[in-house]
Length: 59
Ligand SMILES: [Zn+2]
Image (cartoon, rainbow, N blue to C red; front, side):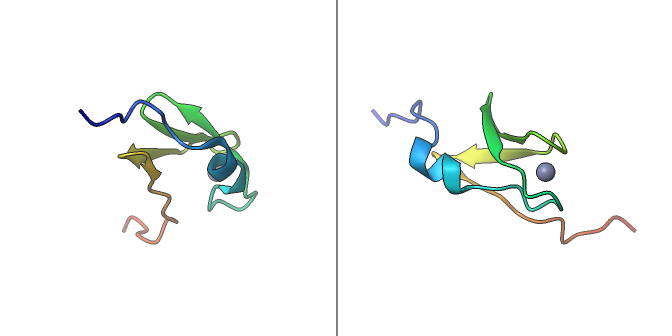
């Protein structure tokens, strides 16, 4: 049975920053990582954070 309840490794979490302008650190939130500054939430897929910059601007 896969153990996907561990979340992100603390050492990895420390290295992660939000791609927004302030490059804020991220906090673990339910089901993902949340930026302290812009409140953007990045999904966690099998313990791997999917942090993508806003490349797709809404037209
Ligand atoms: Zn941010």
